[in-house]
Amino acid sequence: MPSSRPHILFVSDVLPANVRESTHGIFKRMRLFLDACADIAEVRALFFVQPTFAITDDLARTYADELARYWNLRITVKFCHLLPAAKLDRILNANLFRGPLGYRTSGPEQVSALSELIAAGPSAIVLHRLNAASTILRVPRPDVPVFFDMDDVEHLAFLRNIRQPPTWRSKPLLYLQIPAIIALERRVTASVDRTFVCSARDVKHLSSTWRMKRVTAVPNAVEIPDLSEAPSSPTVAFVGAIRYEPNAIAIDYLVEKVWPRIRAAVPDATLLIAGSGADRTRSYHKHVDGVHFRGYVTDMAAFYAETAVVCCPIWSGGGTRLKIVEAAAFGRAVVSTVFGAQGLSFDDGVDILLRDDAESIAAACIQLLTDPALRLRLGRAARQKAEQLYDRKNVVASIRSSIESAIVSHERHRPVADKSGPPDIHP
Image 1 (tube, helix red, strand yellow):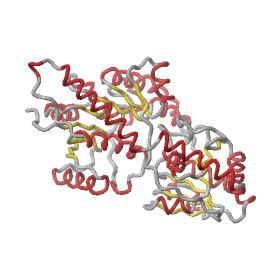
Image 2 (tube, helix red, strand yellow):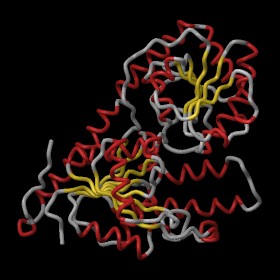
Image 3 (cartoon, helix red, strand yellow):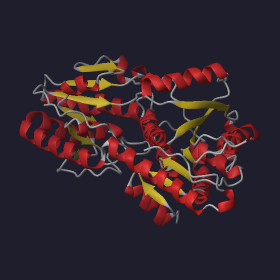
Image 4 (tube, one colour):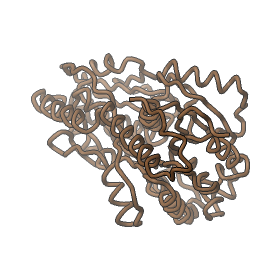
């Protein structure tokens, strides 16, 4: 029976193992949508989890309590197992539901879990990322607005990751999966009311290249902190979850290829690396002079108070780099690869320095470390851009407006015989 209480259903297949330390960009973006939903109505969340995850009602309540404590979110949580991963399927079966994405959330158990929650009568449904969203194709079209946060354009992220090390003999077979990913993206996008991606660049790619409709950019965002002065000490920083492979690759590149050039020019320079999972990198075990791994940092304001320049030599991954937006919000000058800043509205030489080889990246860092006026100018310009485009409260308000407007419009156009009254949407 439908629930008498207005609520929004949120569906995802990514679950932070540690809610308190969930600093990965995926979870920060997830929180944008959860906060927006929670501003409108009660939120009920379905998380698809690994088959080894021991699902119990007590665990669901404990997890909801953790979200309330650390994310300030009061939601009802339900878990459902993913289908077991099958390596042969991932490599060879490139069809819509047993290809590289989507098949693990499209079995009878997963479809039943989603159907049960839809039957409870949500006012809207928000699907987070492609794997979870694919389940919507296996149920009758819900008579409520459905939103899909694609976040990364999965086929582009998959293509970039194939081209990155490590390599193995059968790795080229992974290219065969890309048509299936694109087909799944197109089917899900066509089945929902609105699709969100990270940048205008992604909107253009999906709309122009693949003719996907109703796609809108919702940028990744950060809370704008109080502005603080950058230190005079020559300190370079890298921030990111190091368990995420593109970050681990970037750190090794920074420490092994860029850092020796910086230290040769600025002998008292220090490199600070913030993020959990440092033991995944080669450089962590080398104990390089001047390099300090700080682990998970709880006080980012204190960390940035030590930081003069942020370096982001990222070469792979998806979405947009929140580490750049965060550094800009703190008013710090940033050096990045062109790919690292892709999808962000920072301009080379105006509010960021973009360089694509070790020598040039090091030279840009050295220039900023030794030129306080340039460092200050770039940092202030970056801060202004962050305030204009990436302020978290404004982005959450934009998401909320999109969902709320769709709910109100849907209720207004629903046939009179089906109406039980408009949803009790609180401001």
